[in-house]
Length: 183
Length: 227
Image 1 (cartoon, rainbow over the protein chains, first blue to last red):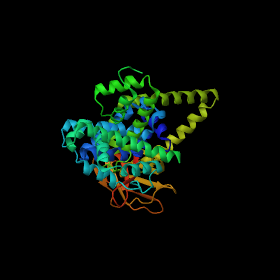
Image 2 (image 1 turned 180 degrees about the vertical axis):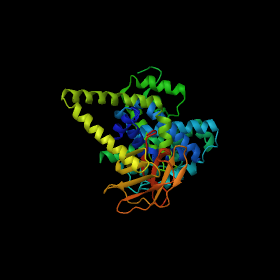
Image 3 (image 1 turned 120 degrees about the vertical axis):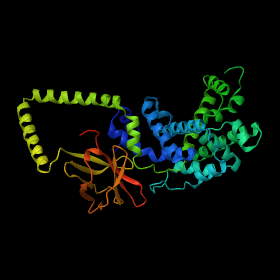
Image 4 (image 1 turned 180 degrees about the horizontal axis):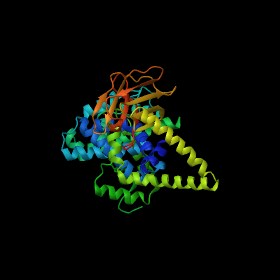
């Protein structure tokens, strides 16, 4: 079944099996990949990814196309499910160096060999232009839901420094993307 | 703007709120402020979009075979199927009403009877109970071909991949309703199609996966739960 992301989400939410399977197939590598990045355990990642789709089905009515793409909405759900699972298991915090390396290893081609969207590549470039400590802080917050206080402990730095790293990274990323937009 | 929080103070917190890591007190302060400050609200919206986009950079990874099926079973329980059927019933009723209005009921019934009779005769020739055609979908959920499934003794499948479909399928696997995976050793695409008997009742098959040389599912077809 072909169709826009929004149309497939609507069909999925209505309980249409064909739209549902098309929706899951379109996004499963992204959702499972994110869950695996956060949880590092294939079985737990599958459970979290499935739960993310279940929540998407339940909450489809809350999706607002003016606030972002279906993909980012779905990944935000998957991230929250995976973070909850990490907290429930009280798993060891993922090494920030390992986390950034995993995302860094994710190259310019998607898993099916297609070039990534230009916007995605721009964000990737902007991220890798950040000082390494800011990049780690923003990864720990965005992917693992670590608070400034937790980052302070993990990185063995004062709380104020952790907060500054997070904020500086986000402001710099936004500025980089705005500069490209304005060109 | 609330008197107890300046824009500068609030903007110290917007990144953490956008990333979903602010504590309840900070979150309340920011939300109270942005309710009356358009500039800070715009900043929060931009940073929230940025935080969402960061997740897109995570590596993609192929989930285990059968993931879609297990997910749909979990996401689409029985009540949702009832919900989906309602419009279908309405459509059938509307269609029937239109036929009556056109005076075509007798013709339609005769045609259906002949078709049903031919169908029964065909099935009886090979000890069959049902014959289905289901869409073959690519990774993006698009239609890439058709799988014809005969439920009989023996059960068999025949599949065709459309001209624009992938030709990288090197292996075929059946996933049963009990989540067992069974490789079809005789599978080999020839001119975009393949057919052969399967070593089980087709009614027990939940999905047919075609995998590439790396074991990645490139095409899939789902069979209905009861047929």
